[in-house]
Amino acid sequence: MTPTAALASNTFLFYVSVAIGLLLVGGVTIAVLRWGFHKNVDQAWRSYRGWLIMVPLGLGAIFLGRGAAITLFTIIAILGFKEFARATGLYQDWFMTGAVYLGIIATGVVALVPDPTDRNPGWYGMFMALPVYVIALILLIPILRNRTQGQLQAIALSMVGFLYFGWMFGHLIFLMNADHAYSYVLYILFAVELSDVSAFTIGKLFGRHQLRSNISPKKTWEGSVGAFAVSMVLPWALRFTLPHFDAWDLVLTGLIVGLGGQLGDLAISVIKRDLGIKDMGAAIPGHGGILDRIDSLLYVAPLFFHLVHYFYGLYRTVPPGTG
Image (cartoon, rainbow, N blue to C red; front, side, top):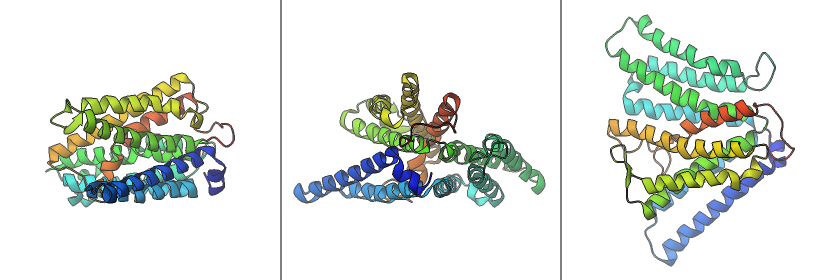
């Protein structure tokens, strides 16, 4: 991943074109509704401003190369965990939060450094073993501090925090090292966001039956099924960006995004409802916190990562100009 490689990649250029087109269409639509039909579009405008920040930032980092992309997404993971720690009260324990921060930073570092065994980008063996070391560190902290009161909760929250934001989200970070990183990373980001938007839009238009009333009252079965259908069709529509995938891979990809994305969203909703909050933060205008934006990726990234690693490996080449 380099600026030169990005400009030579048909896949990268395609997703940039789609992103620009969608932003233009969204902006024009909001303008027409506001000044042509005199509708209240304040919420839509706030959400649109969020996209105006997120899309150029993400695509810009990916364009600059794997170093910039890994750094940006590691920072996103750190900020996501910070929101989680603040919401759950873990943030008050700086030893535990510090251990998780170190674990997340270590995830970014092992994604950046070459593998000492074969010199491929990213130290895959250490990435897979990292949870063992980070959890061992978390368990060591109460012993060194000679504390017992409240430590079970702190340990559990710290483990969940690292596994969710450091390791599960870290699979997206490590995927930047793949030979065909543009195909994989950009597809995941686009497909997950499209699934989220589809669930929201179809649920608003046709939703009648609550999906999980106690967890996320506004989500409906109709929206869920609609998002799943979109996720199953999308790999076939964008097959030219994944030219080495066969039919079975495309089906699995659709299942991973269609089911994994919604499970990731609902899993974070369980935490939010238990805490009695609507959003994890307010970092992104119109979207809530960073965690509210990346929650669907927490399931999809590791599932998709291991799909491609199992069937193709990370370092096999694809036809020039595609990935």
